[in-house]
Image 1 (cartoon, one colour):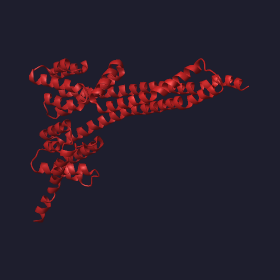
Image 2 (image 1 turned 180 degrees about the vertical axis):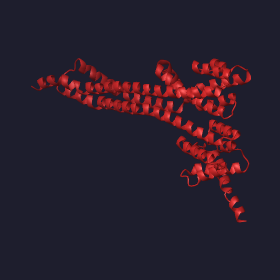
Image 3 (image 1 turned 135 degrees about the vertical axis):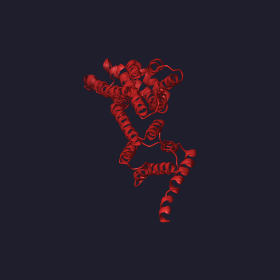
Image 4 (image 1 turned 90 degrees about the vertical axis):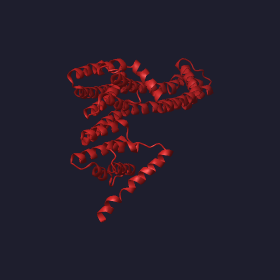
Length: 377
């Protein structure tokens, strides 16, 4: 009797959580977990499953004492659903907190009896994604802060300091000439325009932050003008897609479905509709995979070539793995080059802004100093 009560009492808790989530889902959008938390989760589950701990117990053990109470409740809900007979991937899908790529790989791992491998590969995939996102932020964020501070210093010098210098010259009735006159004209223009320029930049920044279409348009224009940026972005996109597709295909999911699910990893890019269309053509029109990539996507010729080899030698999974590793190495190299070039550009802009502040603020004083002294005499 005691054993029966022990096994049945935990059940209402996850169900209550599910009902709560369902009710909350009507009011607010369900938030997905941070990638850092998912990496820890998938690693923990993979290690326990590899140690022959069953899935239900693994979910229970990981959720016990977990600081993230939302994740703990979600794991309880997944455990309750699996114990009720639901498949593991459907239990994960029901929570609404995991993307299609994650669900697809969990399904492949469950169907092939290699769920521990699926969780481990998910953790590795997310770790690589977090690493490259961190590198991109590091390459862009610091230069952006430096430039913003220097632009602010320039505006302050033109709005506050230069007018004081101009007023001193007017008091001694000296007319500015040459570079001094140019510096004062720049100050007048800055004082008239800076509020509108700053407001425009803020509005543009908000639009870029909120609008995926604007981000893609700006990225496409920048890629068309800067070859290094184009190589970096395409390497990251192809690495992300190919590594995800390799994970899915090597775990038993067919090629067309692997392509569709892997396309979700680049869903916010123009590559997403291209891959989806190529998958449809490959599945329904009977075109070879390499030809589908060649005609309907913008991937590199190297991808098409290796897919062709994979089809002829029945080694598509090996070719996908090789391509994913190759683009990961290329992305690291391009990231280093991009960071160096960006640092040089920031240095030149910093020097230019510092020179502008110096010229606009101190040069008029140096040039008009003798005249001011003569006027005083």
